[in-house]
Image 1 (cartoon, one colour):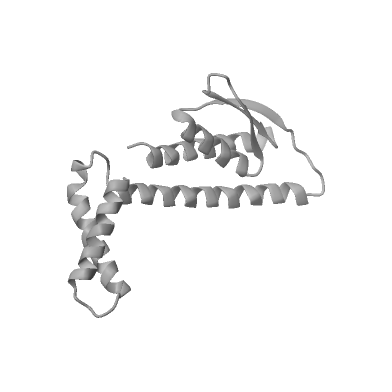
Image 2 (cartoon, rainbow, N blue to C red):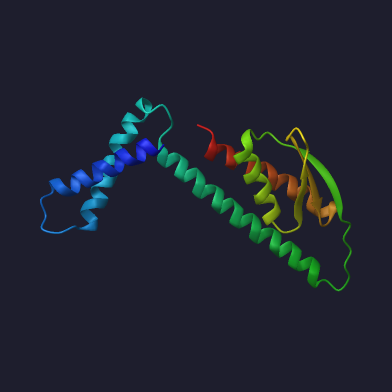
Length: 161
């Protein structure tokens, strides 16, 4: 991925120099970058990995998913806090994940912990099971499981070639 980006950047710089303008103009550089992206797209199989802008797109999608889950869970938590009677049943459940490597595992645990209503308390010694505390087992467990699966899929799109 870095080789693809650097190649694209080099093509954009060469494009800017070859336009023979008296100063640096960003639109010229942007045109060269787009032209370079097209070239790198057709040559990405020689780099041995998928096209790098697809990974950037997957990363932006992960950020969007996290933001929407954060907003949605914050609304649910806000409703529970502002209700006149607090009728929650907190609990702990386990979840076996499909993550490989420390980066994927850490990203998933952090995304779940940052989402209100759930906290990853511990990871099993073999690293395959999360122990998750949910604020309301009856309501949040299904929502947490759904968001875990969504996060898993998005993280795998970003990290795996």
